[in-house]
Length: 155
Image 1 (tube, rainbow, N blue to C red):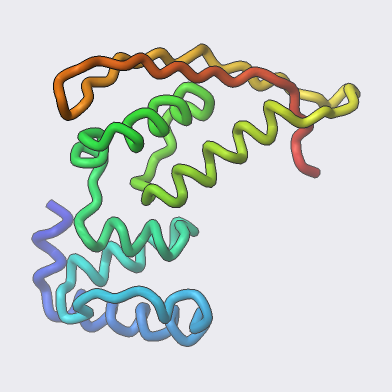
Image 2: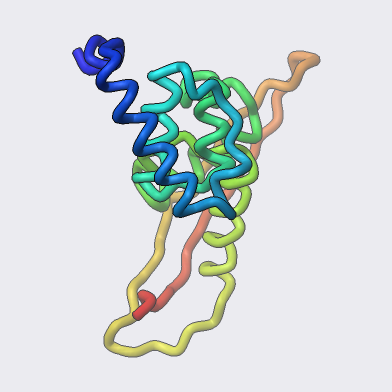
């Protein structure tokens, strides 16, 4: 088990050295991360987030306990995750709400942009997302979203 090895003091020392170097090399972006650097698991997760090139706010969200299972309890987050995952498959990390909104906006921008067709053009077609959402008062509402369009890969 991975976390069993994280209890080793030598592992903590090495992780701490790596974290200090990362902070030095990225002082403009990593200064905002707040967590207990004496907690080996938090230190490991912060380093993993940086190594995965996640946004600092997403790393912080994860360090603060954001998990996909709890995220899906929030109506807006569930709707955005469903829409995004239909277009991008599995996004493979736990983004915060601001990042979800940014991704959603970028998908909509791609859909709405007019792109000249050329041989490198790709098609972005996502099946519509239709969700019946239960309001706090017990009433139901329907939310629908779909994304279609063309985009050219960045070169």
